[in-house]
Amino acid sequence: MSTRGNVVIKYGNTKVVFYRHHDNYISEGGYELATLIKHNVNAPALIKDMLTRQRGIYIHDMDRPLYKLCSALAGDSEYTYTLTFGGDYLSQTLQIKVVNHTYYGGEVTIYSKSGMVGAVADDFYQYCSKEHMEAFKKSMARAS
Image 1 (tube, rainbow, N blue to C red):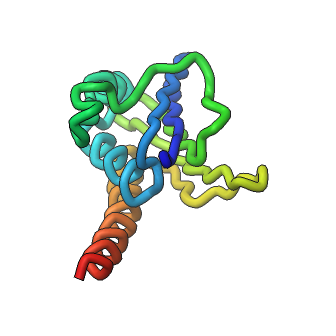
Image 2: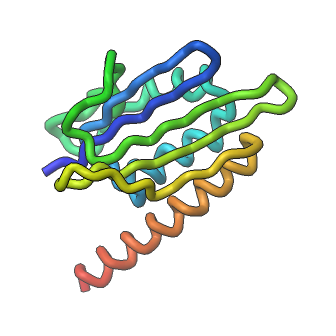
């Protein structure tokens, strides 16, 4: 079973939509996206990096793209990460909103923050890192 999701990146008049088929919950897909945002603090660099990401986790889908460009949001997504870049070169802003699409047709915003790029990127990374570590601890407890 897969946890599908979308990443929407907006800046200026540009909107880029990516689809990710696997592991889109905050502790995995969110954590990886948060890491990419911290290392690519503007939209074009982030988009370029996402285009080159490959799964490489399982032998049957090694070298397949992790993120696929889409023309619209996928209807079966459980999570949507929306990143809106604004401002100018010296005072660049970022808004991040994460929505969980429930099986019952509702939407729950599980994260929302806006401000200067660096501060928002750091906050989102900390939020996702906490979830990542909790998931790791649970998997280690199950293994022992």
